[in-house]
Length: 148
Image 1: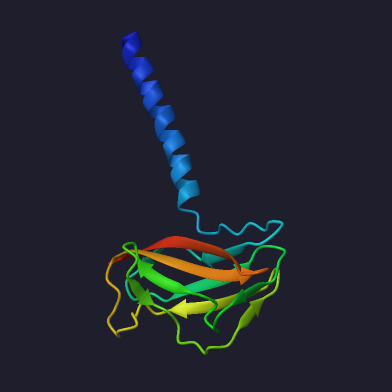
Image 2 (image 1 turned 90 degrees about the vertical axis):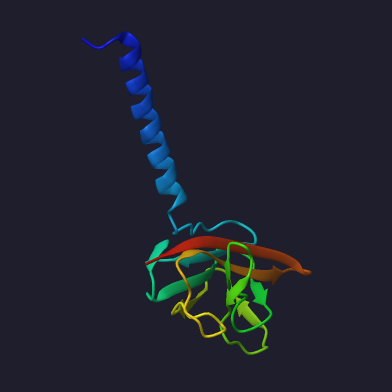
């Protein structure tokens, strides 16, 4: 027969493991597309973990109720390492781009950095920044992982 304290510790461990698992499922969910009142932008990928060399489709969505303005045709898209070093920005024209509420644009990244090298395994941050009403900014970023 098991002692009372062993049963209690096993029970606490099972409950803690379940709670932590639910938290991680929420944390790794990349479809954080929630429409809100006011200014909001969302960056969405189909998943958060990618194989090396796999094409990554990135959607930038105006998830608010205010039109957003971007300084170029890349809609402010930047891919950096977690240290902040710029890895990739799409080639863009210096034209002002607008994104109306509910509208979205899609980009794809073949994991080739701006310098022509292939991205290594690791964590990358995909971000965008837009402007609304009187030079106020709204930005959003997500983190993805590239595996071997």
